[in-house]
Length: 199
Image 1: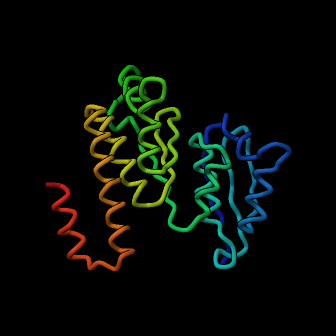
Image 2: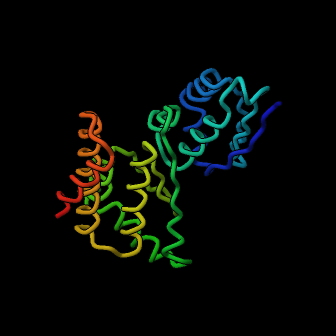
């Protein structure tokens, strides 16, 4: 069964998909057994594969979408790892049609000198790209969900400190879960120990 899907990306990101001397395009084609037809005027990339079973066209479309959302090809390649998710948040959900509101929300997510974005990336081990009207997140599925919640909270007007504290708490909880699982502690005991930590 053949596969064909068109991925729309901003025209100014087409060069990033092609890469220096066609390097990124070639890597994607070889790595995932697909053929890419790039239309630089329209900002479309058509992903074709003879068989979706023997190749990985779905990962190819996700990597291309991530590059289109502002990620470098190196960061976007992380989507080839099993269990890695791509989440895209449209900030217009929070800003409506107001250009000023969109700029303000983008500023909140980025933070002063990029602090907010950096804190979210560090506490979730995710990559964030704030590009145009969207915030895109690449990371392990559970971590990407946390990063997404943090971005949505900031976009909704939550205080930075509140969001950071919430992320820190979630990070500590995950570390404890991993530690207890490694020790072979039962799920019930883990929950009980974490409840005690939460006070």
